[in-house]
Length: 264
Image 1 (cartoon, rainbow, N blue to C red):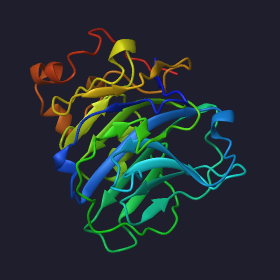
Image 2: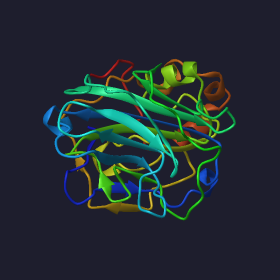
Image 3: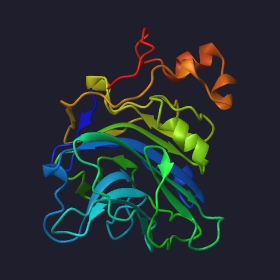
């Protein structure tokens, strides 16, 4: 099952200070999220909820988080670089269903066009992009679930977090939304399935391993997201270049016998 991040205790997984992300001009993150209407009610004042990323010196979340404007049904996803942000417009179709959400960032693009957000593998209209030409550098840990003391709102369930130091194309993001395992291996920083009970926070990319668990997240109760297992059924060009032996090493903790069907 996927991982439930309780609404108390700022539960999350910590992966240390990944230096390759400091000052990067290319970044992509995608993740599955499941939240009920009560978990996503937008009540109260404008609020940000942690999801994936680091923090800046002011304790604010960098990279990717969920936000609302308070007092209603406004739900949005946003990314932040410490000075400016880019967010989706109001999105009310996120309750009681698995949603695949992704962001890409390219600091080499002209101002105003550096960020993009994808829902279900497709780009969505976003508000004004005020992101800078590079992500900040700091000594903060990369976190999933709790970022900068902000936690996923009211106990949302997350699965299959993938982080790259690269700007994925629209085609690549669409492909990643269909498969559990990453289809692009180049520049992969973290792949955390957030599944398999005791190994919820483990990573399978062979580089940045889980370093700490904060107020242990729980096994979720909703069905798994509608993803295809395994990656070997339809591989991207990058993955095809990896030998079977290397692929087994990268994903050695995954079950040996996985059905060639779609969960959900």
